[in-house]
Length: 181
Image 1 (tube, rainbow, N blue to C red):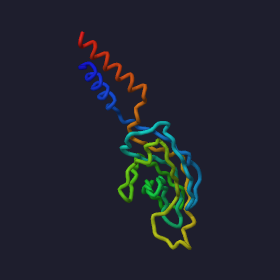
Image 2: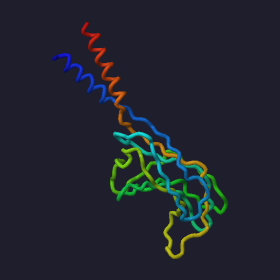
Image 3: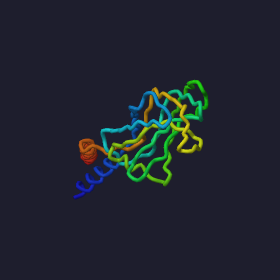
Image 4: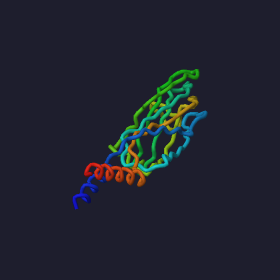
């Protein structure tokens, strides 16, 4: 009976140990943009997650903003919740000006969680916008940009695979048996 209890405890402890990984996901949104253009993206981590700790945005490119300052935003679509976009540098220059932004955090406007990412899949969009108010009938027209590289850094804990749990449990069982003899 004691052996069963010890084995059960060893298995539970080994299955409770899980480590966070950082997934670097390149986004397929590179290219030329004009003001208001948006490109949809889909991500698939290839695994399910137990917890998402943080998501960061990395982007490089250039912007030429003649009518108003320009910037790129990256937004996740998650059911009724829309994560507030991560923004690149704001550029206000008539010539193409390079930018590089690393580890920009995402912000939710209504204290939402990253639970929509637990299945390892999500979608969103990249868009070239301005940070000034304008009349919708007269948007700024001369804002252009190029994205050369974009990626997401997702800090999350993956769901342990059944084989991993089995091996950890067997390892605990061997240790308990070895300790008793």
